[in-house]
Image (cartoon, rainbow, N blue to C red; front, side, top):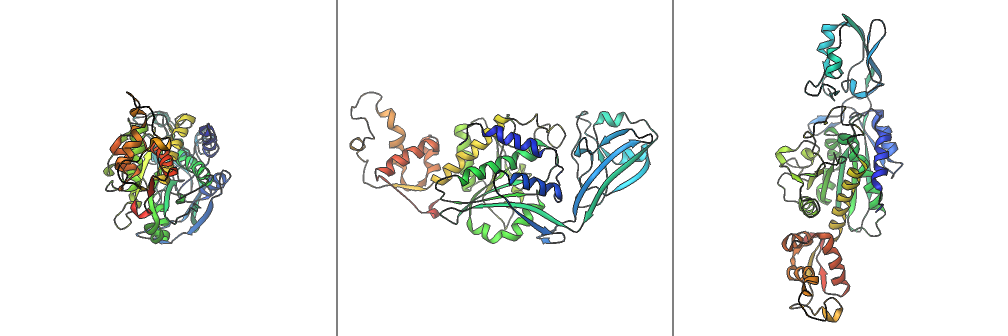
Amino acid sequence: MAENIGNSIYQLAAALFPICRSITGDGVRKTLQILSEVYPVTIKEIPSGTKVFDWEIPDEWNIRDAYIETLSGERIVSFSTSNLHVVGYSEPVDKIVSREDLLKILYTEPSQPNAIPYVTSYYKRRYGFCMSEIQKNSLSEESYHIVIDSEHKKGSLTYGEIIIPGESEKEIFLSTYICHPSMANNELSGPCVAIYLAREIAAMKKRRYTYRIVFIPETIGSLAYLSQNLEILKENVAAGFNITCVGDDRTYSYIPSRYGNTLADKAAQNILQFHYPEYKRYTYLQRGSDERQYCAPGIDLPVCVICRSKFGEYPEYHTSLDNMKLISESGLQGSFEVFCKIIRALEQNQCYRITCLGEPQLGKRGLYPTISKKGSYDQIKAMVDLIAYADGKNDLFDISNLIHVPVDVLIGIVEKLAANHLLSAGSEEDV
């Protein structure tokens, strides 16, 4: 694993930050093309009007420019300055409006007077602008010229997919979204970490699992992807993770699947509790991203969420304050390492059984001190404790939880015992 991968992830996020993304449109395509420079992404399109369960793919939206100016031509806000100044999916408009009418289509965040809020209207046609409360309070002209140069058209929803084959058709599923404009933690940290994870996974010498990684617009994208791939996902996904808000330095957060009892939940909790014990655990009632779709009744995929500061919980969320200063190289690096630990643990996670009756004689295999004295047993306690629970009923996460030793430590022990023909592994159905 690259030691300073956080810098590469951060630089990728910085390159993507200016692009105006939405649930459809050229911003999504451009984003996927740039991600493909790190690792190849297959880009797919679903036509507008396609039914996806109870929803329908909307018309494609693209925007070229937008601004509010005084009648003398002084720009008050401009799309070129911040793409958050326009309500996402706004209809085109070019007209003179009174200050009173302008205020009716303005959105601010009074509790954060310096912030521009992120506002969208995907499924009801309207137009509007966003600005800081300070900017709004400074409006003093009687009339203003407002322009939004945008279009809705029959087009498509765009998403990206990576499938990295393994020895088994059983899959680890990673999902992240690419539908927000210029926000760093809520939008860009997820796909930027995910694309470097794809490169890391592809470089593994051996993969037990197949890996499916998707880059989709939130909600409508996961619904669309599920509608086209549900059968194979239900059959093959062993564990899945929604990757979002993984760029800051604050804490780690975990949101379980609907019942919190999947392999993904077990892996997430185990890695976090040993390596980041101060992590925050939420309930499924506090969900809010694509885990809503993946864990919905009838879908029931084993998907949970690992993030840093949870979406909707940190003050910069869905505002212009979620900028490149909020995320960091160290925050991105840490999140990347969490998922690498989880992936390595899942690859090694099986139900192990000791191959002899009674405790094996470790000394003759060089696994036990040949001099017995006070303290010598402490050196191999984790090994003998693992052996004690290697009865074919417990997987590696279970044993880790029982003997209070991190999985990454146990992996090394398993490798030593297996090399000495003292452990046999169960089948994939055992985990």
